[in-house]
Amino acid sequence: MIREDVFGYDLTLRNPAALDSWTATIQAFLAHGAATPVRLAETLEKAPDFALAHTAKSFFMMLLGRSELVQTAREAHAEATRLMGNGATARERAYLGTLTQYLGGDMHGAAASLDRLLTVWPRDSLAMKIGQSIKFVLGDGIGMRRSIEAIRDGFGADHPHLPYLKGCHAFALEETGDYLGAEALGRDAVLRAADDAWGVHAVAHVFDMTNRTREGVAWLSGQPETWAHCNNFRYHVWWHLALFHLDRGEHEEVLRLYDTEIRAEHTDDYRDISNGASLLSRLEIDGVDVGNRWEEMAQICESRTDDGCVVFADLHYMLALGGGDRNAEANALLTRMQADAAERNTSMKTVTAEAGLPAARGLMNFANGDYDGAFADLSAARPNMQSVGGSHAQRDVFERITIESALRAGRLDSARSLIDDRTRRRGSLDGYAERRLERIGDFQESKAAAR
Ligand SMILES: [Fe+2]
Image 1 (cartoon, helix red, strand yellow):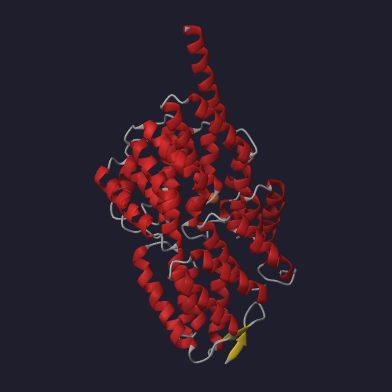
Image 2 (tube, rainbow, N blue to C red; image 1 turned 90 degrees about the horizontal axis):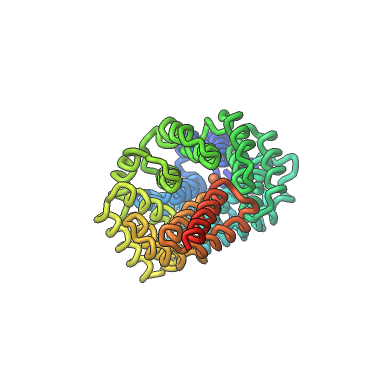
């Protein structure tokens, strides 16, 4: 009954025929593969009494960040709990305990528990990747790096998932400012596993943060096959390619990518909405007319105001509602966030109180043309913005709107100091910052000439 999994650890699995499907599930999850739910369904069809697969299903549902999936996640957790009553390994019970924390709203606790699991079972790349995913939602780049560096010695050349560990390590290094190390590891990861979309993506982040836009375009447009197998993560990689073109002022190409890849399908996954809303906001800040592109996202976001699973999602829903002139729904979203902030009884509600609520208020003020108000609220949120999660590149849209608020409110010294701070943290002056500094310089010169 107890078998050995791909890591060499005991597994409570009765049907040996399900083992290949389970191994394929883990492999697909590590590669952000669209096949992940298919392989998991195959596993559960062959082994409906396999508790760890129900546990994984629950984690996967929670990571989608949608309130309507929480019930499915709870049911999978209940089934895993029932099945583990018939016997389970210590590792399987540790997974379940972590999941219980996650479902209870304690994402920091769940991430810490996964780290503890990995100290005992360091070759478990499923636990590694789930842990990285939770920490990503928490914006915990340092934690991501620490987790990987604690287990990398267990991932020798014999470990089948060594490339994916390297891809995760590359991304964690990038998020913590080690761009040289990140690029080397990310390139190595992709050479070892051509489907390591996270590794490809980590190197794209390096190019973004170090203003190597030409190399970024070449890196991504030269190997679209490395993320063609992905779930909706593939839209995010296209988004990165669009960011390089945006920084180069190639707006037609940005809009082409937007229409043909990034929002080719009008999906309601929060990460897809984030890509779309973030890109349209950046285009508008650069003075580009985006036509009626906000409308489809605003329509979708009308029904997401009560979701509350992920603060990062809330903020992008607010962008889309503002872009689509949905004042009533934007107010409803803000009211719900106020209630969450008052409760502060889960990880996400605490983040809402400390960063999400003032940021959302700032974004709403910006959409309404109150730039002084936007600047005040976004500046209040700014010291805690990392906690809203996502990557530096993703959160940069909030940084840009804060700077734009300062500029439009005539607070040129504040705008300059924000741009300088942003540049220091990125390690390079990009096209976006250069154009703003020129604008500030021109304005100050014309003011001096007028005097
Ligand atoms: Fe990214």
